[in-house]
Image (tube, rainbow, N blue to C red):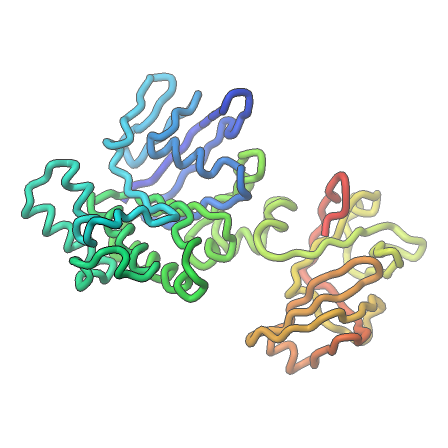
Length: 361
Protein backbone atom coordinates (compact mmCIF):
# COMPACT_ATOMS: atom_id res chain seq x y z
CA UNK A 1 0.00 0.00 0.00
CA UNK A 2 1.16 3.54 -0.67
CA UNK A 3 -0.11 7.04 -0.06
CA UNK A 4 0.01 9.63 -2.84
CA UNK A 5 1.01 13.22 -2.18
CA UNK A 6 0.73 16.19 -4.52
CA UNK A 7 2.34 19.37 -3.21
CA UNK A 8 2.01 22.78 -4.86
CA UNK A 9 1.50 21.44 -8.38
CA UNK A 10 1.29 24.16 -11.03
CA UNK A 11 0.59 23.21 -14.63
CA UNK A 12 0.01 25.50 -17.60
CA UNK A 13 -0.84 24.99 -21.25
CA UNK A 14 0.61 28.14 -22.77
CA UNK A 15 -1.08 31.06 -21.00
CA UNK A 16 -3.82 28.83 -19.59
CA UNK A 17 -3.22 27.85 -15.95
CA UNK A 18 -4.94 24.51 -15.31
CA UNK A 19 -3.55 23.83 -11.83
CA UNK A 20 -2.13 26.47 -9.52
CA UNK A 21 -0.27 25.29 -6.37
CA UNK A 22 -2.58 22.29 -6.11
CA UNK A 23 -2.03 20.05 -3.07
CA UNK A 24 -3.72 16.78 -2.08
CA UNK A 25 -2.75 13.74 -0.02
CA UNK A 26 -4.43 10.39 -0.75
CA UNK A 27 -4.26 7.97 2.17
CA UNK A 28 -2.75 4.53 1.76
CA UNK A 29 -5.14 1.64 1.07
CA UNK A 30 -8.12 3.86 0.26
CA UNK A 31 -10.28 4.40 -2.80
CA UNK A 32 -10.25 8.13 -3.41
CA UNK A 33 -12.42 9.60 -6.14
CA UNK A 34 -11.24 12.74 -7.87
CA UNK A 35 -14.48 14.45 -8.90
CA UNK A 36 -15.10 17.64 -10.81
CA UNK A 37 -16.63 19.12 -13.96
CA UNK A 38 -15.03 18.60 -17.36
CA UNK A 39 -12.00 20.83 -17.84
CA UNK A 40 -11.22 21.30 -14.13
CA UNK A 41 -7.80 19.64 -14.35
CA UNK A 42 -8.49 16.05 -13.23
CA UNK A 43 -6.82 14.50 -16.28
CA UNK A 44 -3.90 16.95 -16.12
CA UNK A 45 -3.26 15.98 -12.49
CA UNK A 46 -3.35 12.28 -13.34
CA UNK A 47 -1.07 12.71 -16.35
CA UNK A 48 1.40 14.45 -14.05
CA UNK A 49 1.22 11.52 -11.62
CA UNK A 50 1.79 9.01 -14.43
CA UNK A 51 4.72 10.94 -15.88
CA UNK A 52 2.87 11.89 -19.06
CA UNK A 53 2.95 15.60 -18.26
CA UNK A 54 5.54 17.78 -16.51
CA UNK A 55 4.33 20.40 -14.00
CA UNK A 56 6.12 23.73 -13.64
CA UNK A 57 6.29 23.54 -9.85
CA UNK A 58 5.71 21.11 -7.01
CA UNK A 59 6.42 17.55 -5.94
CA UNK A 60 4.69 14.19 -6.38
CA UNK A 61 5.48 11.28 -4.09
CA UNK A 62 4.06 7.75 -3.85
CA UNK A 63 4.89 6.17 -0.51
CA UNK A 64 8.51 7.03 0.24
CA UNK A 65 9.37 7.40 -3.44
CA UNK A 66 9.63 10.82 -5.06
CA UNK A 67 8.40 10.67 -8.65
CA UNK A 68 8.65 14.37 -9.42
CA UNK A 69 10.30 17.38 -7.84
CA UNK A 70 10.58 20.56 -9.89
CA UNK A 71 13.22 22.17 -7.65
CA UNK A 72 15.44 19.09 -7.45
CA UNK A 73 14.82 18.26 -11.12
CA UNK A 74 13.54 14.78 -10.35
CA UNK A 75 11.23 13.35 -13.02
CA UNK A 76 11.02 9.55 -13.00
CA UNK A 77 10.16 8.21 -16.50
CA UNK A 78 6.57 7.03 -16.94
CA UNK A 79 7.57 3.39 -17.55
CA UNK A 80 9.46 3.30 -14.23
CA UNK A 81 6.76 4.74 -11.99
CA UNK A 82 5.13 1.34 -11.40
CA UNK A 83 1.57 2.66 -11.41
CA UNK A 84 -1.26 0.54 -12.79
CA UNK A 85 -3.81 2.37 -14.94
CA UNK A 86 -7.23 1.44 -16.27
CA UNK A 87 -8.62 3.59 -19.08
CA UNK A 88 -12.18 4.48 -20.02
CA UNK A 89 -12.02 2.59 -23.31
CA UNK A 90 -10.42 -0.59 -21.84
CA UNK A 91 -7.46 -0.37 -24.31
CA UNK A 92 -7.19 -4.15 -24.63
CA UNK A 93 -5.47 -5.28 -27.80
CA UNK A 94 -7.99 -7.07 -30.05
CA UNK A 95 -5.42 -9.39 -31.67
CA UNK A 96 -4.16 -10.73 -28.32
CA UNK A 97 -5.83 -13.28 -26.07
CA UNK A 98 -6.81 -12.35 -22.55
CA UNK A 99 -3.68 -13.81 -21.00
CA UNK A 100 -1.49 -12.18 -23.66
CA UNK A 101 -3.04 -8.80 -22.86
CA UNK A 102 -2.43 -9.27 -19.14
CA UNK A 103 1.11 -10.60 -19.69
CA UNK A 104 2.20 -7.68 -21.86
CA UNK A 105 3.54 -5.37 -19.09
CA UNK A 106 5.67 -8.21 -17.70
CA UNK A 107 7.02 -9.04 -21.16
CA UNK A 108 8.06 -5.42 -21.53
CA UNK A 109 9.99 -5.86 -18.29
CA UNK A 110 11.61 -9.01 -19.75
CA UNK A 111 10.54 -11.22 -16.88
CA UNK A 112 11.07 -15.03 -17.12
CA UNK A 113 8.29 -16.89 -18.97
CA UNK A 114 7.30 -18.98 -15.95
CA UNK A 115 6.99 -15.88 -13.77
CA UNK A 116 4.96 -14.08 -16.45
CA UNK A 117 2.47 -16.94 -16.74
CA UNK A 118 2.16 -17.38 -12.97
CA UNK A 119 1.60 -13.69 -12.28
CA UNK A 120 -0.77 -13.23 -15.21
CA UNK A 121 -2.95 -16.12 -14.05
CA UNK A 122 -2.90 -14.77 -10.50
CA UNK A 123 -4.05 -11.36 -11.76
CA UNK A 124 -6.85 -13.00 -13.75
CA UNK A 125 -7.84 -14.93 -10.64
CA UNK A 126 -8.21 -11.64 -8.75
CA UNK A 127 -10.80 -10.46 -11.29
CA UNK A 128 -12.44 -13.89 -11.76
CA UNK A 129 -11.38 -14.25 -15.39
CA UNK A 130 -9.12 -17.34 -15.37
CA UNK A 131 -11.55 -19.41 -17.44
CA UNK A 132 -11.36 -16.79 -20.22
CA UNK A 133 -7.55 -16.76 -20.42
CA UNK A 134 -7.47 -17.95 -24.04
CA UNK A 135 -10.41 -15.89 -25.30
CA UNK A 136 -10.03 -12.92 -27.62
CA UNK A 137 -11.51 -9.56 -26.52
CA UNK A 138 -14.31 -9.73 -29.13
CA UNK A 139 -15.57 -12.86 -27.36
CA UNK A 140 -16.05 -10.93 -24.12
CA UNK A 141 -18.68 -8.54 -22.80
CA UNK A 142 -17.81 -4.94 -21.97
CA UNK A 143 -17.61 -5.75 -18.27
CA UNK A 144 -15.33 -8.70 -18.92
CA UNK A 145 -13.03 -6.57 -21.07
CA UNK A 146 -12.83 -4.04 -18.26
CA UNK A 147 -11.83 -6.83 -15.86
CA UNK A 148 -9.04 -7.76 -18.26
CA UNK A 149 -7.87 -4.14 -18.22
CA UNK A 150 -7.86 -4.19 -14.41
CA UNK A 151 -5.91 -7.48 -14.36
CA UNK A 152 -3.32 -5.95 -16.69
CA UNK A 153 -3.03 -2.96 -14.34
CA UNK A 154 -2.46 -5.07 -11.21
CA UNK A 155 -0.15 -7.68 -12.75
CA UNK A 156 2.95 -5.52 -12.10
CA UNK A 157 2.35 -5.62 -8.32
CA UNK A 158 1.69 -1.91 -8.14
CA UNK A 159 0.68 -0.42 -4.81
CA UNK A 160 -1.23 2.27 -6.69
CA UNK A 161 -3.95 1.96 -9.32
CA UNK A 162 -5.30 4.88 -11.33
CA UNK A 163 -8.74 4.40 -12.89
CA UNK A 164 -9.80 7.05 -15.41
CA UNK A 165 -13.59 6.89 -16.00
CA UNK A 166 -13.38 3.06 -16.19
CA UNK A 167 -17.13 2.33 -16.30
CA UNK A 168 -18.45 5.12 -18.51
CA UNK A 169 -18.86 2.85 -21.55
CA UNK A 170 -20.83 0.19 -19.66
CA UNK A 171 -24.60 -0.05 -19.39
CA UNK A 172 -26.33 0.73 -16.08
CA UNK A 173 -26.42 -2.85 -14.78
CA UNK A 174 -22.78 -3.50 -15.66
CA UNK A 175 -21.75 -0.21 -14.06
CA UNK A 176 -23.30 -1.32 -10.79
CA UNK A 177 -21.58 -4.70 -11.00
CA UNK A 178 -18.22 -3.16 -11.91
CA UNK A 179 -18.29 -0.72 -9.00
CA UNK A 180 -18.82 -3.64 -6.63
CA UNK A 181 -16.07 -5.59 -8.39
CA UNK A 182 -13.59 -2.70 -8.04
CA UNK A 183 -14.35 -2.48 -4.32
CA UNK A 184 -13.82 -6.24 -3.87
CA UNK A 185 -10.56 -6.18 -5.88
CA UNK A 186 -9.26 -3.31 -3.76
CA UNK A 187 -10.00 -5.24 -0.58
CA UNK A 188 -8.21 -8.34 -1.88
CA UNK A 189 -5.15 -6.37 -3.01
CA UNK A 190 -5.05 -3.70 -0.32
CA UNK A 191 -3.99 -1.26 -3.02
CA UNK A 192 -4.56 2.49 -3.10
CA UNK A 193 -6.93 3.48 -5.91
CA UNK A 194 -7.23 6.96 -7.37
CA UNK A 195 -10.50 6.95 -9.29
CA UNK A 196 -11.18 9.81 -11.70
CA UNK A 197 -14.76 10.60 -12.68
CA UNK A 198 -17.31 13.34 -13.30
CA UNK A 199 -20.09 10.93 -12.23
CA UNK A 200 -20.98 11.93 -8.68
CA UNK A 201 -23.26 8.91 -8.15
CA UNK A 202 -20.50 6.43 -8.98
CA UNK A 203 -18.13 8.30 -6.69
CA UNK A 204 -20.59 8.14 -3.80
CA UNK A 205 -21.11 4.40 -4.29
CA UNK A 206 -17.44 3.51 -4.52
CA UNK A 207 -15.16 5.87 -2.66
CA UNK A 208 -13.76 6.00 0.85
CA UNK A 209 -13.11 9.70 0.29
CA UNK A 210 -13.79 12.27 -2.41
CA UNK A 211 -11.68 15.17 -3.59
CA UNK A 212 -13.94 17.79 -5.18
CA UNK A 213 -12.30 20.06 -7.76
CA UNK A 214 -13.83 23.33 -8.90
CA UNK A 215 -13.85 24.49 -12.51
CA UNK A 216 -10.73 26.62 -11.97
CA UNK A 217 -8.70 23.62 -10.78
CA UNK A 218 -8.76 24.38 -7.06
CA UNK A 219 -9.46 21.71 -4.44
CA UNK A 220 -12.85 22.62 -3.05
CA UNK A 221 -13.28 19.89 -0.41
CA UNK A 222 -11.74 16.59 0.63
CA UNK A 223 -13.58 14.16 2.87
CA UNK A 224 -15.87 11.17 3.19
CA UNK A 225 -19.13 11.03 1.27
CA UNK A 226 -21.07 11.75 4.48
CA UNK A 227 -18.93 14.80 5.26
CA UNK A 228 -19.38 16.16 1.76
CA UNK A 229 -23.13 15.53 1.58
CA UNK A 230 -23.96 16.64 5.12
CA UNK A 231 -21.33 19.38 5.52
CA UNK A 232 -20.55 20.85 2.09
CA UNK A 233 -17.74 23.39 2.17
CA UNK A 234 -19.50 25.85 -0.12
CA UNK A 235 -22.22 26.29 -2.71
CA UNK A 236 -20.20 24.58 -5.44
CA UNK A 237 -19.95 21.32 -3.48
CA UNK A 238 -23.60 21.49 -2.45
CA UNK A 239 -24.69 22.03 -6.04
CA UNK A 240 -22.25 19.66 -7.74
CA UNK A 241 -22.76 16.61 -5.51
CA UNK A 242 -26.37 15.55 -5.76
CA UNK A 243 -29.48 17.42 -6.89
CA UNK A 244 -30.33 20.78 -5.39
CA UNK A 245 -32.97 23.52 -5.44
CA UNK A 246 -32.22 27.23 -5.00
CA UNK A 247 -34.78 29.90 -4.11
CA UNK A 248 -34.11 33.65 -3.55
CA UNK A 249 -34.60 34.83 0.03
CA UNK A 250 -35.51 38.41 0.90
CA UNK A 251 -36.51 40.49 3.90
CA UNK A 252 -40.23 41.28 3.61
CA UNK A 253 -42.38 43.49 5.84
CA UNK A 254 -43.51 40.51 7.93
CA UNK A 255 -40.14 38.75 8.03
CA UNK A 256 -38.09 36.45 5.77
CA UNK A 257 -39.72 35.41 2.50
CA UNK A 258 -38.95 33.43 -0.63
CA UNK A 259 -39.14 35.61 -3.73
CA UNK A 260 -40.50 33.42 -6.53
CA UNK A 261 -42.41 36.12 -8.38
CA UNK A 262 -44.83 35.82 -5.47
CA UNK A 263 -43.53 36.30 -1.92
CA UNK A 264 -43.95 33.22 0.27
CA UNK A 265 -43.40 33.71 4.02
CA UNK A 266 -40.53 31.58 5.35
CA UNK A 267 -40.74 30.59 9.00
CA UNK A 268 -37.34 28.93 9.24
CA UNK A 269 -34.18 30.45 10.63
CA UNK A 270 -32.29 32.71 8.21
CA UNK A 271 -28.76 34.07 8.81
CA UNK A 272 -28.75 37.89 9.18
CA UNK A 273 -26.40 38.33 6.20
CA UNK A 274 -28.86 36.44 3.96
CA UNK A 275 -31.55 39.06 4.68
CA UNK A 276 -29.35 41.85 3.39
CA UNK A 277 -29.94 40.64 -0.16
CA UNK A 278 -28.25 38.54 -2.82
CA UNK A 279 -28.69 35.16 -1.08
CA UNK A 280 -30.58 31.99 -1.95
CA UNK A 281 -31.97 29.15 0.10
CA UNK A 282 -30.55 25.79 -0.96
CA UNK A 283 -32.40 22.56 -0.25
CA UNK A 284 -32.11 18.96 -1.44
CA UNK A 285 -35.16 17.42 -3.17
CA UNK A 286 -35.45 14.79 -0.41
CA UNK A 287 -35.57 17.59 2.19
CA UNK A 288 -38.75 19.09 0.71
CA UNK A 289 -41.81 17.56 2.42
CA UNK A 290 -45.51 17.97 1.87
CA UNK A 291 -47.31 19.84 4.65
CA UNK A 292 -50.96 20.76 4.18
CA UNK A 293 -50.69 23.53 6.79
CA UNK A 294 -47.71 25.29 5.19
CA UNK A 295 -48.33 28.74 3.66
CA UNK A 296 -45.80 27.91 0.94
CA UNK A 297 -48.12 26.63 -1.80
CA UNK A 298 -46.97 24.94 -5.01
CA UNK A 299 -48.57 23.16 -7.98
CA UNK A 300 -47.59 19.62 -8.98
CA UNK A 301 -46.44 19.67 -12.61
CA UNK A 302 -45.38 16.03 -12.82
CA UNK A 303 -45.03 12.90 -10.73
CA UNK A 304 -42.99 9.79 -11.58
CA UNK A 305 -42.83 6.60 -9.50
CA UNK A 306 -39.27 5.23 -9.46
CA UNK A 307 -39.84 2.09 -7.40
CA UNK A 308 -38.25 3.25 -4.15
CA UNK A 309 -39.42 6.87 -4.30
CA UNK A 310 -41.64 9.38 -6.06
CA UNK A 311 -40.03 12.15 -8.09
CA UNK A 312 -41.99 15.38 -8.43
CA UNK A 313 -41.55 18.68 -10.24
CA UNK A 314 -43.48 21.54 -8.63
CA UNK A 315 -44.16 25.10 -9.72
CA UNK A 316 -43.55 27.52 -6.88
CA UNK A 317 -44.47 30.93 -8.24
CA UNK A 318 -42.18 31.43 -11.24
CA UNK A 319 -39.74 28.77 -10.06
CA UNK A 320 -39.72 25.03 -10.60
CA UNK A 321 -38.38 22.81 -7.85
CA UNK A 322 -37.75 19.10 -7.58
CA UNK A 323 -39.04 16.91 -4.75
CA UNK A 324 -38.08 13.33 -3.93
CA UNK A 325 -40.50 11.53 -1.62
CA UNK A 326 -39.50 8.21 -0.05
CA UNK A 327 -41.95 5.34 0.15
CA UNK A 328 -42.00 5.65 3.95
CA UNK A 329 -42.93 9.33 3.75
CA UNK A 330 -45.50 8.56 1.05
CA UNK A 331 -47.20 6.04 3.33
CA UNK A 332 -47.19 8.45 6.27
CA UNK A 333 -48.16 11.69 4.50
CA UNK A 334 -49.75 10.43 1.30
CA UNK A 335 -48.80 11.35 -2.25
CA UNK A 336 -49.80 14.21 -4.54
CA UNK A 337 -51.22 13.97 -8.04
CA UNK A 338 -50.37 16.05 -11.09
CA UNK A 339 -52.32 19.31 -10.99
CA UNK A 340 -52.73 19.29 -7.19
CA UNK A 341 -51.94 22.32 -5.08
CA UNK A 342 -49.77 21.31 -2.14
CA UNK A 343 -48.18 22.92 0.87
CA UNK A 344 -44.45 22.31 1.25
CA UNK A 345 -41.91 22.68 4.02
CA UNK A 346 -38.12 22.70 3.85
CA UNK A 347 -35.71 20.74 6.04
CA UNK A 348 -31.91 21.02 6.38
CA UNK A 349 -31.73 24.29 4.47
CA UNK A 350 -28.55 26.19 3.62
CA UNK A 351 -28.00 29.75 2.46
CA UNK A 352 -25.50 30.76 -0.22
CA UNK A 353 -24.76 33.90 -2.22
CA UNK A 354 -26.72 33.89 -5.47
CA UNK A 355 -24.84 33.18 -8.66
CA UNK A 356 -23.91 36.23 -10.66
CA UNK A 357 -25.34 36.74 -14.10
CA UNK A 358 -28.55 34.77 -13.86
CA UNK A 359 -30.77 32.51 -11.88
CA UNK A 360 -29.31 29.68 -9.84
CA UNK A 361 -31.79 26.88 -9.90
